[in-house]
Image 1 (cartoon, helix red, strand yellow):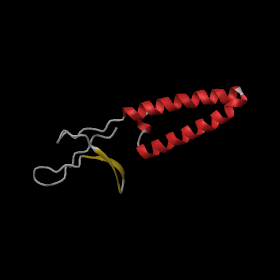
Image 2 (spheres, rainbow, N blue to C red):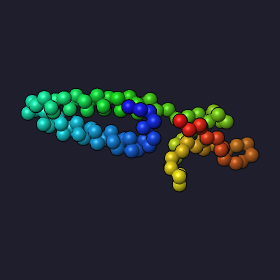
Image 3 (tube, one colour):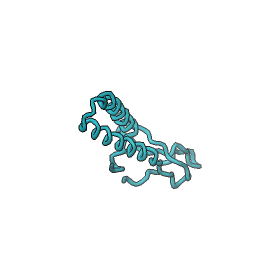
Image 4 (spheres, rainbow, N blue to C red):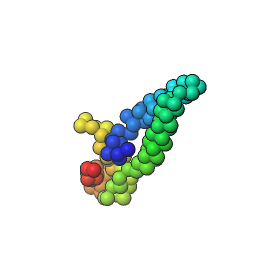
Length: 100
């Protein structure tokens, strides 16, 4: 899997749930002993393992102004990383990590 695909964590988790549901469906039919179902089940299990590994590897960027982990928020123009800290003059931090 490509890390650039991990844009929206909620969509990613929804897809992960759908794959797990498909795995349960395959397991119900695995009793028939067909090679096609067994092969599909092995592929789904491998995809789930990789998806969980990538989900665990996601780390937020650090704000270079405040040295704190940034928070992903959903704005009018889509998701972005925000520092959520105020500067010494009372204004909100405007630091944005470089786009990947």
